[in-house]
Length: 203
Image (cartoon, helix red, strand yellow):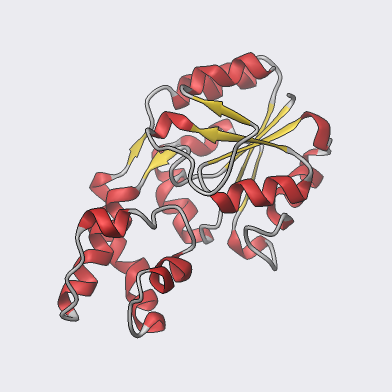
């Protein structure tokens, strides 16, 4: 592999608590009580799909509140252990690194740039850059285009079925970020990586 493209939530950053606790608070205020464990089963899929799966009423209203409310839980966000070191080593070994995320630009700046992770990446594709988000391959293809990368030596690192489907349609290898402690649901990754360091074995 020569080109490594990364998802953010559940891959580079542990943001589960930020999203789930803010959603739980919004629902509580609307008289809807859901356990953290139930809400967490939807972590990693697009917000609207999560609310549909949870059968939440007034989806658009909840969506409008959810993004801004996450700011109250920013202190729960953490970089997964070993990520900065592995990214630095990949770059030193000559790999091209990019981010392709469903986050909007302000979320990328808030969650990635603020933690200094952007320094390791040559390109970042965010929601505003593409017409169709995951599971469409548009974001991966755009990142590859910007890097002049070839599908045969490109891997997309993510953690959801949407990431797996986008990778397959883009014709690239899909690597599951198993260092997040989760088990793949509804999909089978091309490769599963239990630690960030394991990415170096793909070079």
